[in-house]
Every structure is written in C-alpha cells, then in structure tokens.
Image 1 (tube, rainbow, N blue to C red):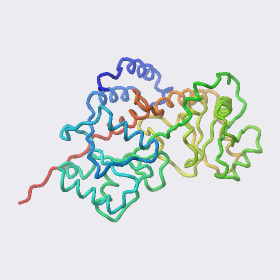
Image 2: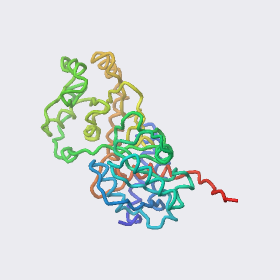
Image 3: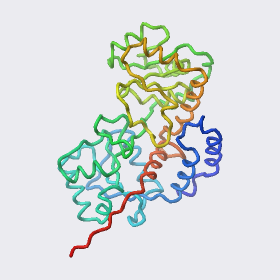
Length: 347
C-alpha cells in the first residue's frame, strides 16, 4: 500500500470536528495531531537493519507491530533518507549479544555515532533494564524503546519510550453484541482473574453496586460492560479487554498504587480526562465514594472520549488509518527530531 492511497480527506473531517470543541476531545492537541499525522503519511521513512538471523516475536502484539512495520510504506531501503533506524533483535538475546549488536552498529555503520543512538528505536515486549555495559546502556538511555503495556517498573523511561496498546482478542464481539443497554445496572464492573488483590475484590463482591465477573462468556461479558458506568482493572493485570470496554462506553478505572506514565498513546490521548487512576487503599468503600463523586456532566464527557479514543487502540492485521499501528508510528514521528552530533575529525 502506498502512502498516497491513504484517504486524507476523511481524516480532515474527523479532526476538524475534534478541533471544534477541544475541551470535549480525547486528543491532547487535535489540530496539531492532524497536521503532524498528514505530514507523517507523506514524509516519514524508517530504515530497518537486517537482523543477525531471522526470528519472530512470540508476543502477539509485538509480532503484529513488527510485521506491519516491515510491510509498511514507511520502510525505506535507503538509510540516507531515513528519519529513524529500527534495530531488530529477538526476545532471548543475551546482554552480551545485545552489546555486540550495538558495537557492530557503531563500527560498521555511520548512523549510530551521529546521535549516539538517539535516532534509533527497538522493540522489547517487556523492556530492557539498565546494564553496566556501555553499549547496552547507550541503547537503553538514548534509543526509543517500544514495549507492550504495561511495562515492568524501571524498564520504561517516560517521554522517550512508547508502549503498544494491548491486543484485544474479542473485538469482534462488540459488533455482535445486542445494543440494548440503555440503563445502568452497576456502578463498576470488574473482570477478575481469580487471584489478584483477592481481599480488595472480596470487598467489591459484597457491594451490590459492583459486579465481579469470573465467567468468560463473551456476550454476557459485553452485556455486563454495557450496563456498567465504570470498568475496573488492575494495572499489570488483565488489561487486554480495556479497549473493548472503552468502545462499549464503559469508563476505564485503573487501580494502581503509584503514578504511571506508560499508558498507550501518551503523546496523543488525554488519559486524565477519559479515565481514572485510583488506589486500592481504603478498600471498596473509598473506591465507591470516588466513583460516585464523578458528576454526571463530567462522566458523560469521559464516556464519549473513551469511546472515541478506543478507535485508535485497535490492531488490524492490515493496518488502517488512525489505528493502533499508525498511532504508534505517529509517536515515533514525533521523536524524529534528534540532535545529530558533528563527527570530530582526528588530528
């Protein structure tokens, strides 16, 4: 698919509508987003280094992003026209092998040394930690890391790194579900894995305003989500269904005991206005007070924005305009401005 075949006019209409009321928009900057996105489609080029040996990512969403990148119109075979450089390596690459890989880039190619790797990016589903090796440390601190949300604490550097939206395996259920949820039955819906934070969940079970669901019948789950105001999920738990919940009009509530900065599309979406971050401290009673404290007008806006934002968190086997793949690429486009250090001549 060539970049020029992507329909730009519908995008213009979409963002013009979003720009008309910025306060009701899920985007941080609707006008800037559209202009940057259009420029990205026309100009962005990524050079992919050849891996030492063929490999596949076992993580489904990482694999989908990687394969989409390789087939995308953003990929170039000419490194001299590239804005960014992708460094592919498998999940089981050891620290020593990773150090050797970066060292080879430094020695055999001219591009790494221009920015010390700041115009390079790599894909590591769980993220890489800090290392005493100079080459791995340079990769960690300078290059853009793309990981799968959520990321292990310490393996993510805010404002530099990016997370992939979770892969939602049941997106097709949304269109198949009956649209008869005009009334709200529950304040909060929680799809529980049966083990995480069990004491807190037991408190939720005892309160009739919350529905704790362990069953996995897809249509029943969709019906329960559509009749709930808020959908609860533990940060680090089962987050894959978050996109589905947002699309169905259920405002996500992330339960976490510390600030988080690795939510997907942090450069694009106003997460603070379309979701809630709450702590489990204080138990179900405190949570209920917080949720009931959201005024109807504010809740209606959050619900609309969550539904609109969900469209950018959906993965497609064949990427479509403004979907998860393109918005991750857009975040890379925003990071293309790097300082190119002048190479010092030896005297």
